[in-house]
Length: 558
Figure 1 (cartoon, rainbow, N blue to C red):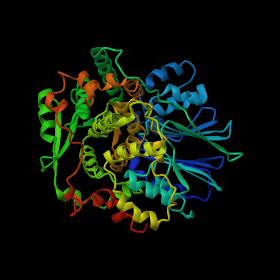
Figure 2: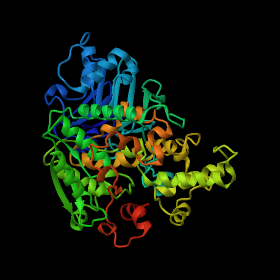
Figure 3: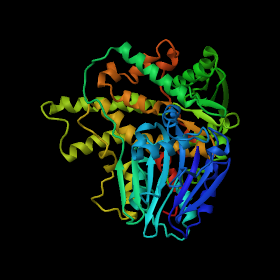
């Protein structure tokens, strides 16, 4: 895991930019310039700890240069295929990416799976190419102006490198934050900077300065209802794919552990990890407030399965010490308060591990949020109220009603609050804050599948994965996400409505897969999530404090 920065703008201070994200790579760094292009890198050594894994990396003929942040899983198979033609000087996945690009060009992306932000400079075509992983686990920001292009792992790297830039606030992005609690891609808080969307590639042509942005991965979604496959067959295949993914994610040359909350997803990942690596440690934190605490469940689970557990109970004083650090972690408004306990468990785990496996993604893939059931009720009531003869794809007003119902389930800021900012920032009256949801919403899908897909494309990369990446990397900890391997994702969305959630239950197929393996109190217990007691952060327990507190406390200049 690493941090990257690069660009063609010669007046920028790339040294200062890369130093601002040194937390992503404390084990070394390097800056190189070629043909007026700068590539900067800081390294967190995880695989091939020798100098052979250092970046920027160049091809043997000196025609292709690469910097890369992330991990490629199962890369050994691709390496064996490439060894027939290419000489390898180390055992890093970076060298596999480089030679795969030499062999297959842009199609190399079909050969790899993992979490990644890849930047390639190809001298032969005079192009800079950026690739972001399929689900958005790793961030990739870019700036394009008259001076040229620049890209980075975090927004602060561009801010620090481009000190001569007058950064202009994008008021619509901040307004979107009030809806979503994060700024949805491709926007950032600055008009001049964008996030590359998950599953996309960007090509910058150096001679013409033209930019092409294309999607390289399209997720196929089963649009049907009913059941074609047996429950036991689905369970067996799913358990096999998750186990395989966990084994691939465990490959590292440094100590590895897991995050264990006591919920279904992290328990499954921890169980599979312990099957493959019996001496692995699980890291868990809890609260003194029982309604938020799952650590006792996690402890009982580890005792039953003979898994080594390290546990810490958080108190108000622990959060108080870090409550003003959100701005430094995220660079722009971000209001998921579970970032605080996620940072603390990352800091706790980093004392013993460099890599952890997390259970993120399970809710979105298999339908784990209670609001899905609320939307099902909303959907049924609409049909029962006289819409039986009409298709569910209706007028814009009806579509907005559906999106509003989805949005309410996310607990977003009340309308009365953001009206104030609408006037303050002069947001045009026809501005549609639902556009981010609308571009991924597929109302032709069955309702449960529709919700899963929508969250997978919006909430997961915008909130969950962003949250974990920034706070784990703040302490130089690599967080890996086995549920989001390509095989598991594509299998989850190959399931019909009933195959995934028979009986309208939450995570039904996942529970089938681990029934009798994961204790019933975890599989069928009440979901608590990874929330934080409100009194840990704000004295007032108003929704406006919860969802807009970050804006008020850290972004007063706006």
